[in-house]
Length: 476
Image (cartoon, rainbow, N blue to C red; front, side):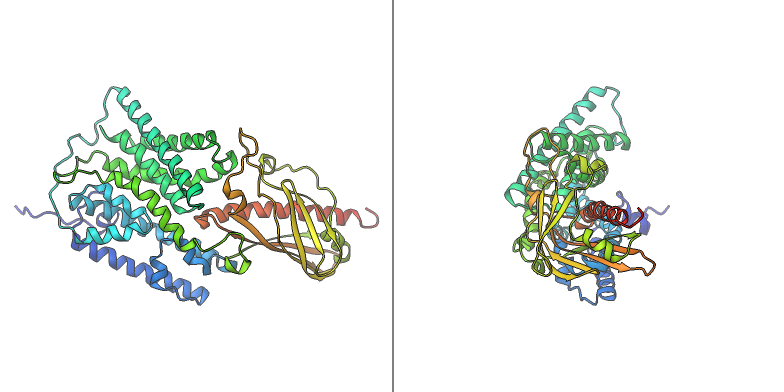
């Protein structure tokens, strides 16, 4: 009878959580996949942007190095690259967990793969560490205790520890570093979910459903604590919730498998799970370092800009539409729930002077945009810079005058433009564009939300101009 161990399939080796990974397999597979992914990403970037993405930019922990593909017509490419990265992310994470087990450190060390900057150091260490035997888990992995009280206590303990981690990271990232980055919005929720899952599954592995429930509960309670301590408002927490829930559930699922691992080997006094807590502030610091030279109030050319363009068709010629673009009277109260919840919305516009050099004031619910005219071509084009802007929202909170730092720095309008296109049949296509800088990460996630909000603001203005123009025609 052949007693040789069965070699795992390629799928089990790359995507599973059970097949062992020795250092030779880890190094060959890991660095080969890294080289392949770099060639794939760099090839796509060069094909669509004619920009050569260097290996140093690829290894950078900050998405800031992807600035060439974050603006204009190539913004979609970043989304494609992020989707492509997902299977590579899982392979790297699962193999790092199993390599750490094989090296005798415990699979929790492999979770450092999620931390930008620190992951490369961990990969080099695991590629060099020899294999060591591990004792079997002391608890049957699928045993569910009949007494639910220990299970409830573990869930509450894990949730409480996770909330403390979330509060500490909000304080450190926002108020110490002044940064809203990937570590805060992606890695911290993953660690929060992992922590709650570890306590919940430590004595006996619980079901996937109950583990995910505890992870989601941790996110909800953490959000409530952030609201209670006046660190954020309700609307911003709701915007961040989908990403936080996803990352917390991923962290919980992985840690569910790791929780029943035995204690560290003799001579290894510190459980590597605690390194995750120490790694969070370090990862946030490493992430903000490449962006530390950027001032959110700096000149437009120092930051990548996004354009949001919206259009409507007006049943009136451009000559009739133009005066209502330059300035317009009071808009009706908003119907959108987001505007009523505190998102800034336009109310009226006026202009001082005419032609290039005139100053337009677009008054929002939170204050006025100051917009010097840079292009005056009646009745076709009106362009302007933005030299001052009000807060993008009034936070919905139990506390008055709540003003988190992100309200003044994470989204900055730089310039805008109205274009009136004569359709030749007495109608006009009215287009509105805003160019803005976004300094909150991950940009792929937040840009979807900010673009949608700007489209809503554009539509409110354009529909009002349309109604005014059509109402001013003879016979209406």
